[in-house]
Length: 517
Image (cartoon, rainbow, N blue to C red; front, side):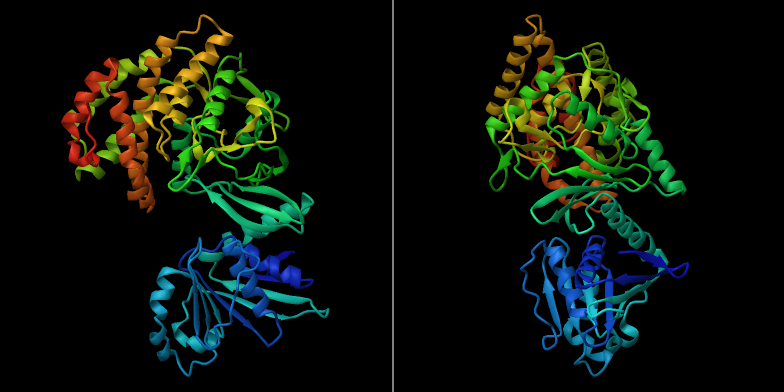
């Protein structure tokens, strides 16, 4: 499929060789739809509107057998999927005023909407709708599509999704069917691509635009020593694989555009149930994998997979302070309904600084930073520690080995019982002692308490920020768990002064009823 812009606006002509190409265009559009989008399908009888609508809805549902009844008589068919959708056929409308009877405005507000016979909506059709006009092509099943919509809303998305399709074609996956897999807190998103009996994972990591807001985001990530672009992912994917760690193999990449095609390690998680709970055997294997890595002499630079090298940065006091300051900036306002006072800020950071000095004086290793359930898979066909697959590692820097252990044993997204947490810490210590009889387990446990408190404090602030700034309130469901984890570690003597600060600054009823001690 080729996409040729025919004007400076979002106005594209696309030649579709056959019905499969029409299906793939619908799948490509499904990959970039958002709530509030309106797609208006235009075309004569037999032009492929039904094929297009069916393919788009099945792509969003990730269900090739999804029943897609025509809404000719019902006028509207709603689908509560990953992306809430509505499919409208307005042929039987005698005028736009009848749209009120089907709750047209409410549908547009809450869902992405696919409309056939959009002309019946008259001036009620939103100005920012994407018009998809289908017409017959040169062959019996060939078609021509023209996509027209306001550039501000549609152009970048359409160019990007077409670029991903071209990348797949260049990688030998031209016939791959794209399905949403996941997104994360960054601008990255992932899709699973299927062809016959094969699957791969498509990473979409778009470059930042050239504007003030983007430059500010880049500067903030640089200060936090977070990865910029896909190059560090490639470097660590190759470096970890060389160490025998199970990470996705890189099948193809375009680092300039931010496209990467990865080996699909499957979807067998290290948690199970509803709500999900850790599978102890898998968490133990994951912590033993950390012990194996931490017992090695790991390099400070890696080949970047092209012609250069990637230098691995290291945590410093400024990083640790900035991370707990997120709690002051976002967590305190969320919890208390007011900003943190100057006195609260000063006393809070004064308590943390000697703790950070202690951590920085300790041992260092590769710190993957997000070593927890969403980023770990179970690979039962592999042997030993290779049974644990790691998905997220591009932000790796040098830090204290206790950090990733705390990330796993106090997993922010699932409840890790206190006895399992103790078992994981003991398993880690045993594995380290087996390799190095001089391993300082007492010092490690002290550092674990400090970094578990630091990490949970940071995440309390991050989740409040995701709600307040980014409109993602579902992260707040994890806050009681984080307070519970904090309650466990704040009983350690080294953290007693910090415990007193939390008790005074954040009353128990503001912590969801979680009490310390």
